[in-house]
Image 1: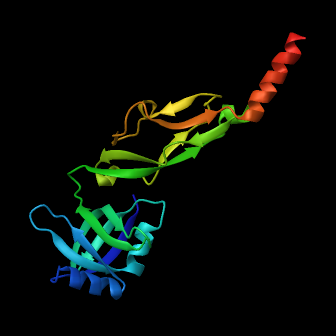
Image 2 (image 1 turned 90 degrees about the vertical axis):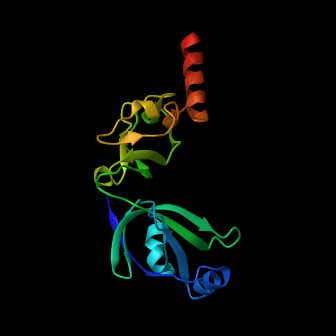
Image 3 (image 1 turned 180 degrees about the vertical axis):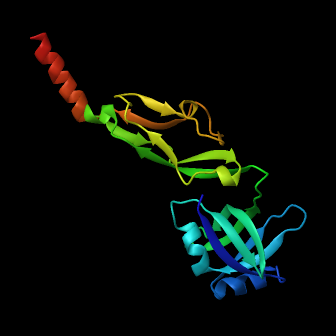
Length: 195
C-alpha cells in the first residue's frame, strides 16, 4: 500500500478560539487517537491535499515535531456549505494489529454482457476490508470478463489473500444491466424468429 509523508506540529491550545486562528492561517486541526493519550496537532492545507483529494488510499507517515508514527485517516469533517476541511482524525497502525479501511475497487476485462449490448455498472467504488496494513493492496482488482448479461458479482463471490471483506455478503459490487437498446434488439430478434 502507498505511503504518504505528512508533517505536523503539536497543539497546546485546544479551544474554539485557537482552532479558528489555525484555520485562518490555512492550518487544519488534527488528532491522532493513540489509545492512552491522544495527540493534537496541526497540518497545513497544502500538505493534507494529496491525502484528501485522491481516489487512492494511503498509509500516512506522520511526523509530529520529530516523532514519527504510521497511521491511517479515520475521519474527515467538512464545512457544510463551503466543503472546507475542518478536522481530520488519524488512527495509528502497527505491523501486528489488523486495521479496518476502505480500499477502492478496480474493474478489469471486457464483460461478455457488454459485448451483448449490456452496460457494466460498478455499484460499490470502495470495499471495507480488515487486515494487517503490510498486506493491504492499493486496489481490489475484479475481473469481469466472464460476467454475462443480467448477472452480478456480489461481495460473497470475492476473496483476496490475507484480507477479510467486511461488507454485507449479498451486496452487489458490479453488474451488467440490460439497456433499452439491447431489449429492443432482443424483442426484434424474437419477433423475426416468430414470423
